[in-house]
Length: 105
Image 1 (cartoon, rainbow, N blue to C red):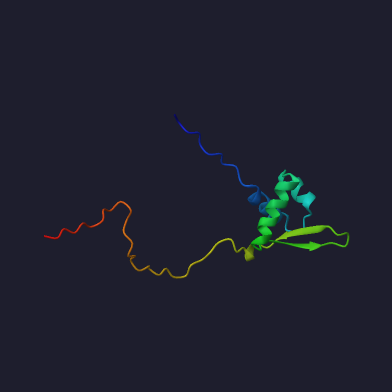
Image 2: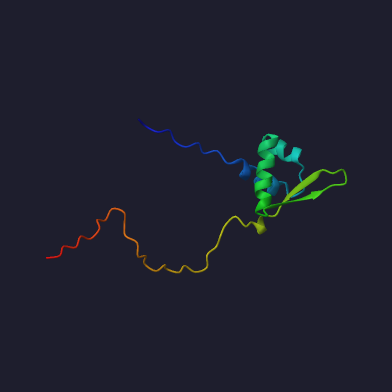
């Protein structure tokens, strides 16, 4: 039986980030929802995830509303390793290997 190809739709997180970057201005939650077509739950989950990694920031307006803006230059989702150090060989045996059998004569 053949498997169906994976659905190639973008994630809600990438859609929200694209909307904030393209707007080049502050957007409220309703503005993000209008530009992406996301529900309240999906938009707030994406904003929370992006905020956790410092990709977006928010400002509280005078009316208590949150205004979101993109800061993609501070994105900390990628981890950069400068130098790879090889590990020392382990002393454990593989699970498939048979233990040594000693015979005494």
